[in-house]
Each structure stands twice: as C-alpha cells, then as structure tokens.
Length: 305
Ligand SMILES: NC(=O)c1ccc[n+]([C@@H]2O[C@H](COP(=O)([O-])OP(=O)(O)OC[C@H]3O[C@@H](n4cnc5c(N)ncnc54)[C@H](O)[C@@H]3O)[C@@H](O)[C@H]2O)c1
Image (cartoon, rainbow, N blue to C red; front, side):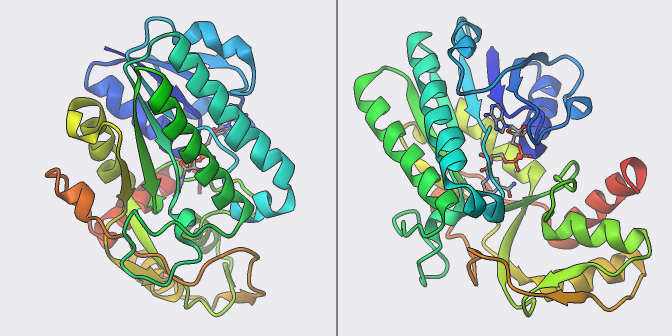
C-alpha cells in the first residue's frame, strides 16, 4: 500500500509518517520546508522538496493508493497578516493536490480542515454541521472543503475531511514566532524563563494527542464508512490556557508567573468538539491530558531543551 503525505516535514505529517512506516506502508512525502524541518522526516520516507502549488508534484502521485494532504499555512495570526498567501497555499495548493490525485486515480484523499471553521459558532460541543468561519485561515479551509465536494462529484477518488482541534505531542512546531501554547510553555519554563499568555488565559481549547489522531488517520484508509465524510478530530474535553499552564508547571515542578500580553487577532474564545460522528465508528481518544503532556515533555527534554 503506497501512501503520499503532503506537509510530511511538519508536526502532524512527520508523526503520521512514523506511524504508517511502523505499520508497513510505503510512504512518499512532499514538503517545501517553509515551516517544516527536514531532520524530523522519518527515515524510510521517499522525500521530495516541492511546493504543492507546482504541477511538478503531479508525477509523484502515480501509483499512490492514498493521499494525506496536510501541507498548509496554518498559524492564524500569520494567515491574518497575509490573506493572499493564505489563499494561495491553502486553496490553490489544495486544488493542485486534488488535481494531481484525480489524474493519478488515487483511491482516497484524506485532507486537513480545521476546528477554525467553527470560529463564529456558540454551540458547544460543536457538531460538523456548524460551519461559521471568520478568519482568513478558516475561510481557506472552508474553500478547500467546497473543492473537495466538487472533486467528489467529478472524479472517482474518495475524500475524507478532518477537522483537527488542537493537536499536541512530540515535534509540535515550537519555532514559529507565536508557537502553540503547550510547546511554548514547556520550552520557556525548562529554559528558566516566564512564558507569555496572550489575553486573560481563559480561552478554552479542545486538545487531542497526536497518537489518537493517528488512530483516526488509519481508520480513514481502512474503513469505507469514512468515504465522503467530514469528521471532528478532538477529545471532546477542553481546558483553559491557564489550566494548561498550571498542569505543565506541576508536571515540570517549575512555578513561575507567566507574562501577560495583549490578545492575538482572530483567536476564538472556546473550542470543543462534538465527536459523536468519529466515536460512532468505534474510534476513541485514549490519551488523557496529563499522560500526553508527560510524553511531550519527555520528548522536548530529549530533543529541544
Ligand atoms: N496542529 C494542529 O493542531 C492543527 C489544527 C487544525 C488543523 N491543522 C491542519 O493540519 C495540517 C497539518 O498541521 P501541522 O500542525 O502539522 O502543521 P505544520 O506547519 O507543522 O506542517 C505543515 C507543513 O506543510 C508544509 N508546507 C506549507 N506550505 C507548503 C507548500 N506551499 N508546499 C509544500 N509544503 C508546504 C510546511 O513546511 C510544514 O512542514 C495543516 O493543514 C493544518 O492547517 C492542524
């Protein structure tokens, strides 16, 4: 079984590649290394440094059974700063990947949407029907969804859209100007510095450990019930940024007051996934927040700090 992953040098892509290789799949990967890191692409991946917006990617899809399309510009504040590039990478790039897959008659395309599509909703937990994008990033993900809908009608490939909530675990991108909260907190505290908290810290997020996400990735390529569907991929529980800071401080045994900074643009107050659709397939998130954070801290201690 041959699998192609776009965004293979990124956080979710590199963890997925590890998981697929361990299961015996043959993995090809594409990434332009704009945000990803070459060193974290697992050994055994047939890697191609290319931009998903280039037609040069087309031949790589020949003979591929399934595609995971994860490459994207995905930091909300970066996307707010450049709507044109956001649309170029996340919409044009996505269509280029769908087109490459169609031409090569790929059996299945699993592509990344985001919980950001629910930004304007105040229904919690949020079901898949509740699409209310606000930011440029969210708009680009909804546009991808509509292109997937159109491709579904006009080609034989099967599609599954995944609305990831806040995924965390080893290799979470800590190099960005504004890194995700968990890696930012752990790295700063281990270095003896106070991490920043933007706004009051009362924003709540649904966090899901990357191994649980990979279990669902595997389900998408082995379970025909996922064909043509879109799923929330979250834990169904949420924690405030302050609560996460508290748990990380306890796990590290390091207690420092955070530095409060102004609110970031485009960030919603609450996310909480309604995971009825995904759990209805037999999938369940298994890793609890303390266990997941402990694994992530161990990885950061070994590889970063
Ligand atoms: N991590 C999360 O919590 C989360 C939440 C919701 C949605 N998502 C979505 O899941 C996907 C993967 O996210 P991630 O956290 O692994 O992000 P990431 O930034 O770690 O990985 C994305 C990868 O895409 C690559 N890329 C970007 N533009 C490219 C281009 N034009 N051509 C080729 N490669 C390009 C980057 O270099 C990077 O390696 C993204 O589509 C993201 O929007 C992630």
